[in-house]
Image (tube, rainbow, N blue to C red; front, top):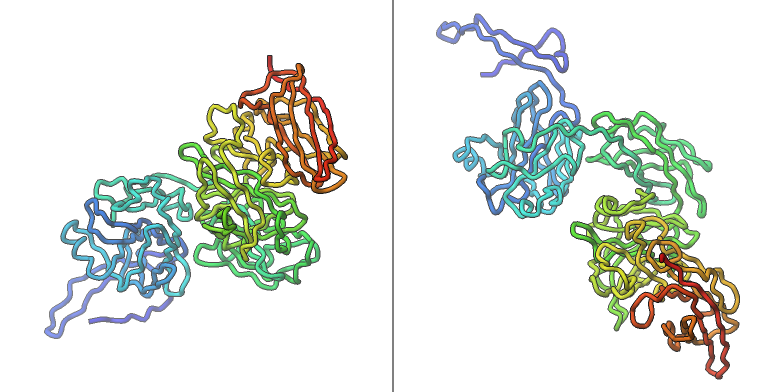
Length: 594
């Protein structure tokens, strides 16, 4: 029997009540003993109930049933009714059973027919959800919503969250470390350490204090159309303040936006309709005002970034500027790009891959970003599968110049081809490298990047590349190369800086030989002689030259040894098909520590 009570006033939210029942009889006159029950009135807010544990890959089972499950945790001191709430993955949304989660308690969700395995073997009460959304092993986004479709909790996990290659193979759950840090992401999740493989309906085995004290920042601006942009943030933010148009200001004639929408379920992105279309060639700035916080109250900082209407790249507008193809143990490969044009270019339009050099066919191409990334003129970006790993290993003055990709095409540690192309597979730049392009006297090239010496020289000029200097840590991701030198473009053949010291310290490590020809189609021989007139290096053999450019010598002789300290003569022969020969004798000094 059910009795509905109409109260004299509305219940107050977040308040505990008691109800006393007395003086009630049944149809035979038996009197109900006085009974007092506690209850509460509570309307859940975002993060009151959070996704607290996941079992995306139960096979092979450690001890628990070989079944997927999701654990919810009530972070409040009030009972919360989950009637008409929903749980979803990216493709499936399902209503939850009409259940109540106790104060500071847990609810475990499973698929149909699974509950008896947990109850009979472990005494754990779980709740079955019809067509329970699949938990993908490699990761997906899971979202909990209330009856009004308001997001209570959302987790975008991946197999890397385990931080343990053995446990990510199956049988172990992912557990949240600190439930009071519900937007902590990967840094707040670990593989379970419980001998059963997980702790459904019980406190997490990895539970510990892991407070979020880091302020969120504006990560980047993406241009969707000429009058619509998106702002991407480093953390989930408060959706109400994020959706307020008055919280955004612009320059160059843009005023208060006409439309702002915070994108659920994570609320790390907001789409903004601008007051007027962007104009080509103009760089704008957006500032996010104070008052926007993450889900634990940390205030947004550094909320200002430039953006511009992107233009389509042409070949060599962006060049491959540095690559790390043989990282140290635990490290990752990276490819650095440099925008040498005056355009702002959206990396969404580009792909990174390789090439079959015999047929010229592109292969293993990967889209750099679905979301978008603006690369401004004279700017660098280091592309890898884990920018955080690169930044941990190498210093960089440009921490924002990193773009993570899901799948960076693999690069062989001996020789391979790296190709940058546009959406139509037109080649923008192509680099065929070998390990022999490294500085020959390095004891080991593991963890050492290859750097481009000059943006203007051809990518396939092998003398235009050298190992990153030791004194900067053997790589310069997302900033100017340690080996950067630019030719001065003088006429004839010149050596702009005749003093060089090939010790891989990042300062004058190579000798640049600049040339500017009076006609095209000339070829060259370049010889290096020591002060006694002995030939020590035949640098260039009958190589056809461009109209102007630069050749480089790294101080290594033909025996693959470092040349001795001293004065050298650079002898250059230029000749054309008609037999005309121009000869140049130039001197240089190879310096070093005695």
